[in-house]
Figure 1 (cartoon, rainbow, N blue to C red):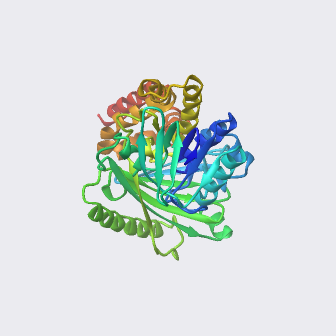
Figure 2: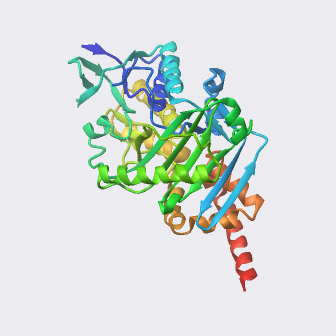
Figure 3: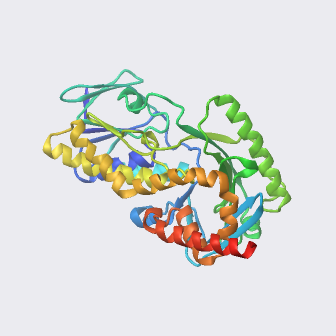
Length: 404
């Protein structure tokens, strides 16, 4: 039987980050994934600039494809737009196939053992250890397991932290290779991004992310799915119509053809509990995502780092109990949990009045800059919520007085 201090299941940004920081401290770590690496992952590929500031090695290892120095926020009904030009990067763009694999290699460089194309099918949580059974019949002993195996996390299910699957929404996207000259023509050298709220009335948004040699176009609907096949079909029709609207408005080249768009399920909100006896969940497996945008890489990497800190402490004290590991949930809630909570509370208001809010925001540069910062994940909404509320109220009553 193979023996490790920690087994990390899932080699996405959350798992690789946790493995890297654990290995740096001398912890004996196994990182394991069911896919053969390098592998692609359904994703828009935009990450907040604050992620680069927090994890400086991302830029040091040249993992960024391009930067977007401005954005346009659009509403279709009533039709209005908000343009935000910036002199500093607004969003960083990545290709997940390269990004994820480089993070894995970074964990390996720091001492992590990596197994790919091998799935953890079952875990047995005992009093003094965890036994992980893999798809090839191997058994792996460890003191603790990190579940970073995505929205359908088997570790979450095995540890009884996730019992139902309806707390998820759906996104569709396609990435198109495009020449540099065409990208410059449509999105300038600043690679301006475009975001459309409530595309064809859905509760969600559509995006156009220009990169170095690609353009990523997608839509996300923040509705819990009931009928998986029906939801996929309906959203695909919306996506096809969205592409045609973009061509008509000359936002994308007319020769773009939808081939095989990819779908991905995203968590709608965090699980009620993200830890158990000898188990910690990170990233999508824990439901850690920005519920306003669907961006999850920042929360994935942050939760991976937080998990590593708690586990190092747990190993030093020889205490992997549920009570001790509850410190993990307290830590991520303190780090970014308030932002998630505020976004969840604001969803109903955005669902009903998203276009009207954009109309108000577009008339005020000060609130527009704050709103874009919050939307791109570069400003913490919990830190500026009262400023936003005061400014919204001021603009709302100003517009009301003008009407009457």
